[in-house]
Length: 430
Image (cartoon, helix red, strand yellow):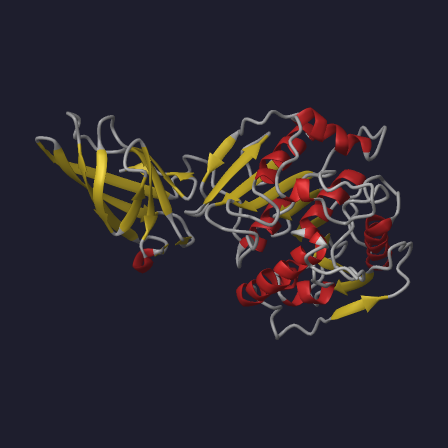
């Protein structure tokens, strides 16, 4: 008999059951009680070699030719658990798309992302069953075949990578939370767990990673799905090193380099890089969440997924403003003496929507170093600084302003900071 000491998959499944699931339940919102729509299990949906179960959520407000979102659970999870503890059904109620929730029946409740069958197009196992679920939904609901998307967490994130690799002609885009690159978990001994990959010890060149994707569907020359990647910097279940390897893989698949076209901080502890373009639907988008472990996904992130997919139809968090649009204004002044100064900054929200969980990035003149501040925290102390809101001023309403300030030393230049960016949006200097 195997146990958690001898079976890494069982051990990790136990970790996830004890940590991820309770946190997900606490952090996510269930679909609104006002909706009459219910989660429905679908039998006989098509080819299903690994005996997956299919659960379907069709909102009352479903649009004509609806988009499809495939939402994939973590190890130890199920389709109904993922439905009940994530925001995708609530977002479907708002925007009219259909959600498919695959559900694993093997004992680990982890998706197969390691077998040779799973890692090639139409090879068998879970990817074939998930593809059948998509085909069923298209047939029975007249869904839009140009707007089919997939997302997942942990094991579901790994399966997101697999589905985009095996079926680039089916999916328009994917979003993977705390996953690993396609092919990283490959095994040949029947094991469902790859310790070398989970510990971040598999390092390939971008070309090698890209070739693994291309080899899963030899001869395919069509467009590739866009990919959004999320990872916590302190992930010790699927090591943070896998995040960079995923970036290398999907930028190579899209024929891009690994130098980002844009970098910003949508929230104070997020760093977002975009590759190939700077807008909301970049070919590759990657969000590193600082100081967070494997349970990286929290309330509100699903709305950013929907924006990346283009399913919010102008609502949700909305497209990020282009730099220079003037949705914020910052005035700054300093009062200097000898080798010291104080600075006062006023941030004004000149846009039409509240600015939540704000952080302001700016650049200090050379030789200045912040020693202390008020109404915000400041890091680092010199160069390009990020001022992060305090508990009492985290939201700036439309037309409202927030005053912050700091005391600093200087070596001769007591001037004001420059280059203000609020949550990734360039501000007008007052």
